[in-house]
Image 1 (cartoon, rainbow, N blue to C red):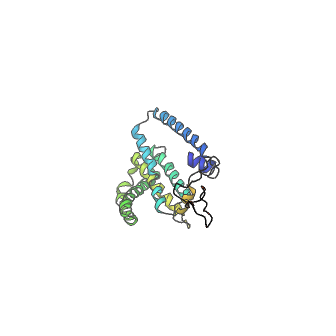
Image 2 (image 1 turned 90 degrees about the horizontal axis):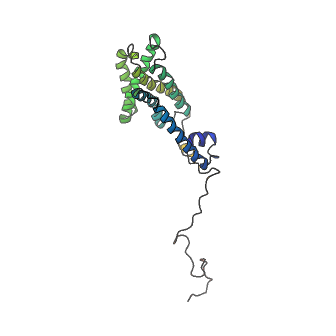
Length: 233
């Protein structure tokens, strides 16, 4: 809220006031704490919440590392893939739509792709992209005969796997044809501090420490050198 919402989108980096950002952050913390207390008072099933949080993380599993390792991933691809994954996860996880017939087959296929994504990303962290692709494809091929046609009966597991696969497919589809890559050198300029706003305090002028700077002359107290030909007793 402080940096992204107010600093970047509401005021802008050049007009962001650090003195305003401080109360914005404090108010945000108070509101977030009140919302957390109210949410906890609903006494929801903790296991269901853990599954839901896992699916939220699942929607980010591919876009986050891809954004770090692949310069083709744009902000639009990242946001769209996460929202699409959540849009598919919610009806599957909570059975808002009957998971049978053709829709059930689609859910099974997406779940199988999710298995490949999960195993591929685990291998990517240790052995790199080539091994990750091989393991991901092998996992899809090996699990498809057993999963397609029956996996949709397990809504909890399907929801998480679908979130993984949809975010991966959408993010890659929107990024692979992008011609211009992201210039990572711009991150420092676009995500710098907000010290240049109108409310920023001016930095005190640096004063040379004792012993620094040009040596004082032996003449006057201000360090001006004595005229040539003079002597000092």
